[in-house]
Length: 310
Ligand code: ADP
Ligand code: MG
Image (cartoon, rainbow, N blue to C red; front, side, top):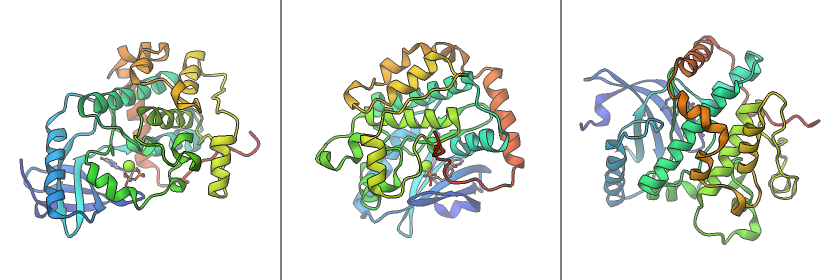
């Protein structure tokens, strides 16, 4: 049902991203806790109406279990507030805690489940609403005690346009070669296979604990590592060949050779994950890590880059 910003009470900041802030808020009348993302936007009133209409469609549809639930969107003092389900954490905090605080690794069965959940969500938003995510990364995969949900996909074209102007490739480390290559600046249309690359980087990161590039010193260095450097290859003994093969095919530098969602969903790596769903196995693990995270008071480093000796 309808509510306004006056019905919400702020209870603290959850996080801050490139173009906004996420707060915890409570809807007083119903007692519902939510996460509210506030994005500064400069769209006019007609655009606002259109955006709310677009949100309404996505909001009412909760067929896909791996998409964050939306409660609504509203405008206040020039900001767009996107109200959504409050989750426990996101995969960036999750993996950094596991690898760099607990000194453990995420087991392959959980990696497969994370992959399956994310892919299912990406495939759903594409086939149902023709939405391409464009910002797949660990912080946009939210984690609760029982499951994982994708967030921050561009529901509104207008909002994306107004945000896109303020962001350049330099602060978007998950972009594939074809999207950062200055000689291909005219590349039009965003293909799902760009998101497949970002998924590959995300999976590499959560399977090793490290972002797969060395920290770049300039945009030129970034281009050199991503475009001219050797192809990325996940090589870790503890992971199965199926797992490595899955990640490595997502990281093909030639976007035409990267698989699309349907093909990835058929990959042998996901065969077991499809049957897992919300079994004790997954919830037990997620819950255990979240317990630890909630007690953890240390700050996390923003990025863990590939160590320079590897
Ligand atoms: P980014 O995704 O670039 O880190 P965002 O502004 O999208 O920046 O989000 C900031 C942080 O807020 C994220 O890292 C995530 O941990 C947290 N967050 C976002 N949405 C939710 C949500 N629905 N529930 C819980 N935490 C969230
Ligand atoms: Mg985000």
